[in-house]
Image 1 (cartoon, one colour):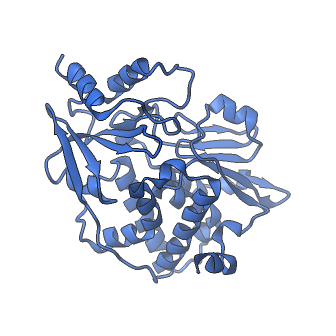
Image 2 (tube, one colour):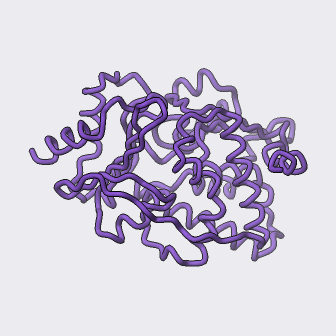
Image 3 (cartoon, one colour):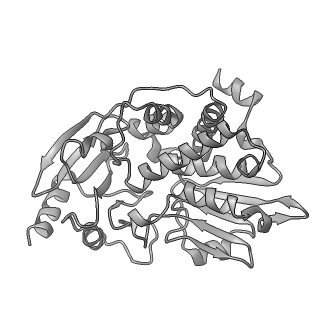
Length: 330
């Protein structure tokens, strides 16, 4: 049934000649590699290129990101960066022969990436001076809500029972279901495109006043409680929204992959919480012998980060607990 729907209406195919999406799961490049290997008119989203936002006018090429090398709380989400740049004339430069042109590269289908894609694909609607005010208000509300959630990695203290949170949960359900199921770590480019496609359809419905709502699943399991930090397993897709209501200010989330390796996410509510995320990244990279030249490594920002996206981690939870405690208790 879903394949039949996608044949009737496939948002990824809109303006296919002018704006093309390229999903490359678990690929991470440096800005130098991106400028060398990717064609002019390329836009990298949310970690496809490591490091902060950058722009090359000669290409043109653009990196929209807020993960590495930034102050997380002071840096706009990737989708908000896209929204502002669209409003300020992005496609006056990303244009060839009077037609908008962009190759959009991404390596995962999360909320921020999917919303950025929708905004870029619907830039004419976003910039339409005659847009229905109610439609524009819904777009702006979604961008603002996602920004606050993403820069705080899902922990901003929204009321989980609020109308907007339940609408947002419904919009991005295809991604959260995939993440919690563990399938996300091994999906191919077609499967990523399928997730994004389903989210784009839901964003269209929401923008047109036809969005739905679902209750947030905030369940999680505590694996270990340390000195001002907690290791957890996320059960529900919105577990992080509950963590900080429960007084957990720093956490390590663990997920075992199908290949026996692990995915770890390290997070804390703010830079002043005494949990040394960046020092831990350095320690884990050293222990796992991951070179500084390797783009697939432990890393992230000052309040959120984690294990390598592609290779995962060989470290077992009890080993991670021991390493963290040795550093935290020094």
